[in-house]
Length: 219
Image (tube, rainbow, N blue to C red):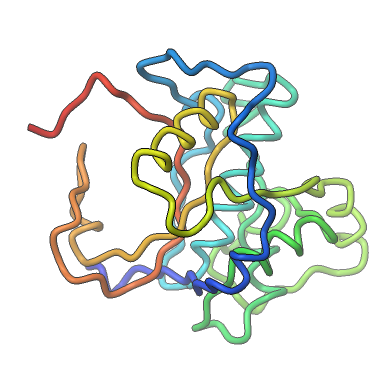
């Protein structure tokens, strides 16, 4: 089952080093005392990338952009935030080397800063696995209305686990989704309420962190 589902992240440690780091001090909206926090009400429905390597497009465009757009406009109803998320294919199809290849985070996020994105219903919905579909000039002009302002990394390489977890909690509590890249194995596709890495990593996968709950344990 796992081999039949695409992943598609290309990790680039050198490019990660060049990304500016987020300050550990946050502004308005910071909630360091919350035992649990979730951005779920802003999330689009869980999507499926099929066999394509579109996980970076889903994590950045379909996921993070949709959530941030909804939060900025305080749109939490189903019809406003979940029925028309941002596109994954608009990103992937213009950046991929082939239909079998993946994407890097920095290349993707730089693309979204410069070119913006379309909505899912206007580009992906007809065939969400059509890696040969390319936008026309009018669609590209529309996408320019939906650019991201910037992106930051949360910590430097070598940061302690405690620092990483604390910074991620702080960022989520300040209403920001977190794009992550992970080495994953086959048991990820079998996860239910919990995912505990227990096998040899075989893929590089982009995902989105949208909440935490310190009241739960896996015992």
